[in-house]
View 1 (cartoon, rainbow, N blue to C red):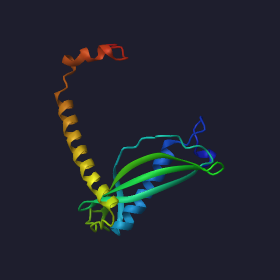
View 2: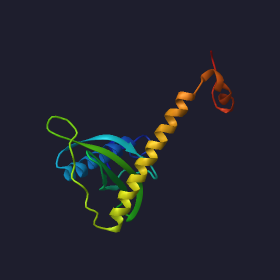
View 3: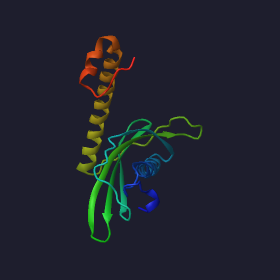
View 4: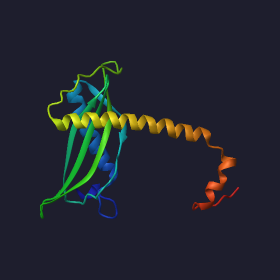
Length: 165
């Protein structure tokens, strides 16, 4: 990681890492699909530890799940201080990609061959991740549709805000 990637605190910008992760997800998905792939969503982006200027960053990607036209790519980011040999896990996240045909329409992707118990675990975790995301979205949408600002104003009393109207 070079100095121009750093913020004022000397840490690498999260946006730089996200851009690298997106490129790696594209490479993994497109290689499996045999087609152009686009990013649909990114789940679980947590910056566990900062990446410092001068560290060597490795991004490990695996296609963990395939649907009909979509692929879930897991990415693990590792940073290494080459002077000390210290290695740290800085990020893990999941990119949902969709394969596109030459006309830009979603196209079917090949199935995934699960070669190890780890592959099976990742595939099963991906199914659970999708189920959880769908349940959470439905729950959140229901909560938002039930929100009544005039009735829920009491919730703001314990928050760090001032009502100025």
